[in-house]
Amino acid sequence: MPSKPVLYLRSFAFWIFFATITLVFAPLLLLSFPFPFNKRFALTYAWSSLTIWWLGVSCKLYYEIEGRENIVHKAGIVFAKHQSTWETLTLNFWFTPQTWVIKRELLWLPFFGWGAYMMEPIALDRGAGRKAIEQLVKQGQQRLDSGRWIIIFPEGTRIAPGQRGRYRIGGAILAERTGYPVYPVAHNAGEYWPRRQFIKKPGVIKVRIGPAIASEGKTAQEILQEAENWIESEMARITTLDVHEHGATPS
Image (cartoon, rainbow, N blue to C red; front, side, top):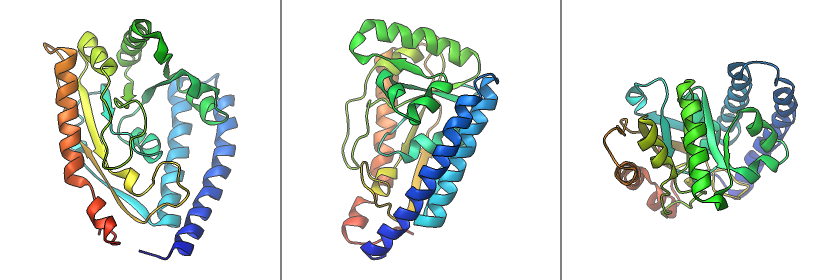
């Protein structure tokens, strides 16, 4: 593992580039509102691609992925582990085009919120209870029928590596009512790009995409439990926490 000053300098170079391209792409995305969704999505894809490329160049942080062959549908519901900012940038590499289920207040954030709004997310007021579920199902059906993937973080917020949040039922209700499959995604990005930390650690993030979970004929609870079991079992398999504790970097 490089020394802390080296890690700091690498991370500083990353953040400077990231801030610069975000300041460039955010206005471009806003100005793209007259264009079709796929054109706007292409801008988001380019921004994400540049960011992840520079992450490798500056911080020596890369990724490997298994399970792309499991993606056999043109649209579906993705249940992804949420540990970091990293997965919000990369999930559009494999599930394209896509939209997210997000907290409504995220739309109020400068730059991020503006870009998110242009991607037509399903923005929920989580305090609305049953009304929020009905909004999720109605808008989710529309997005799925138009050929878009829906990205859901079932734990609702970023969870620190080695910890497990409560999996929420909303996305599974969407799957139960629409009949679209669920794709579980596990990754260990939080072990390299930790939440609310400046420094990015070098290494290889492991991403695993599971086989599609059929939703037809299953209850929402059954769908949720199947997805949770797969994700958490994969998390236990790919974690490098013990390696990091001994100061080594995985190959």
